[in-house]
Image: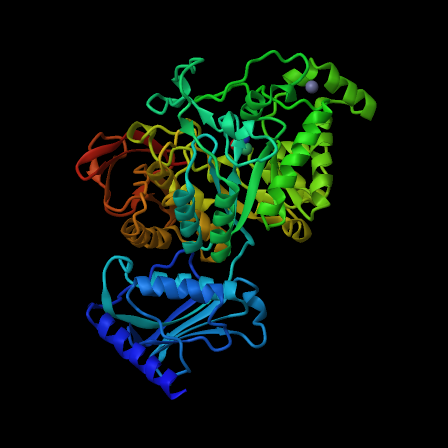
Length: 618
Ligand code: ACM
Ligand code: ZN
């Protein structure tokens, strides 16, 4: 016992000596994303240093969260030493003896005072999020600069999420991203308290998961001719004998490694296997799974397939066997209780001409091809349910009828989600106009190529409320949350993936976690700027954002209309005129007349970033 005490003391002294080599910094601002439910600053401060003792109280030293925390702290050269509770200079982690009901499973309290830092929660998951908040209290470059002493202003935080489903989706079919990049994505999710990773593993452009029973899915379906040097929409078709060098897939070992890595960060992984469409990779590998009259030669290609006519034959029993076999191999790899079965954009052209599909419809008394798709999906749903899994599908699964247990992902606007919630189905909101991070985040004229659809700016994401209007309290309970989707047609490098995700993922995190009443664009924008410094310091690539100004109009006490201009990127200079052609620099809100027109343009660092355009006062 004496020896143990001696070793512990020595460790404390050693780590204090090591850490004291670093610089001292006084933190003068906190910029937490997502914004906590309650946060008060207080008198006093605490100095975190190498001699700060970690006290685990009732949390086991072998707990995976404790191991994670120790690892991160060692990276900062704060070698955490876990001993009995000291009077002061203590970073302590406490699992509440009796649950604090409001905190739920994910919430936490974090207190910084003169004696130390205390993070308490009902669960290890809550402690983990408390620790993520603590990380954001520390200097932005904490992972790169050796600080011996960090002086933290006293504060009191009480925090828990608004929504349970806080998701981020990654399409690894259009472009394949390896284990390292996926882990980096998961780290990002954890930092912003996102907890559902939707992994789009199969599509026309590549099958990305090892399947033992159908090896051609990997030998053939995971590879294509490399056309990454050409624009997505205009690539040359693959020649027959060209080597297929672009692609890859995750082995089962790698899948396990990623799922474990996610679990350590309290992230559930949802694999998506597309049924019945988006299946070129399957049909090139196993052409017998196509419809009877389908004489297309399918090839895994770079570039769009439009209209997406590749479809698995719904009248062929081998297809159902194939899908069940796939589920049998996938289910043991993913412990979370959801499997995403796709269901989107399946053009039924081949089914309409297929005697087998028509015979199946006749036999089952189905009145249209949407019902045939529903039959197929419900068959798979029944199958996976026997192994305790539920299904999620894109909102097209509503068309031919859906079981009451299926969860609907509303992507074509919010209508599908509203319909589903009214029917009693669970819903995840992911409408393109707010949640598709493959769309441009700023004026396309000044951006790398992206999906040419609507503009999804940071402020637009921030302005989105995942809870649709017009639902009763009971129906609202079916809105589980939302997620950001990153389709990767135009995204062919990890750097570009990060550029499109960031900083919009910060906005997604906040709209899912923080109370709606606390929303403040100006406050968020300032916190994003600090977070961008942190993200860059952690080697993430961050989009610059939109320079496009927008307008709000208020009335002053005398009833005059007052125009205020807003913009995303700090340091943007907006010039405007109200009809006389004399541009002036915008510095503060100004009076305007009803029906007047303001012409605006933007400069950043001396460069024109938005051509003149008009904002109308209505
Ligand atoms: C989708 O974007 N096709 C779900
Ligand atoms: Zn068919």
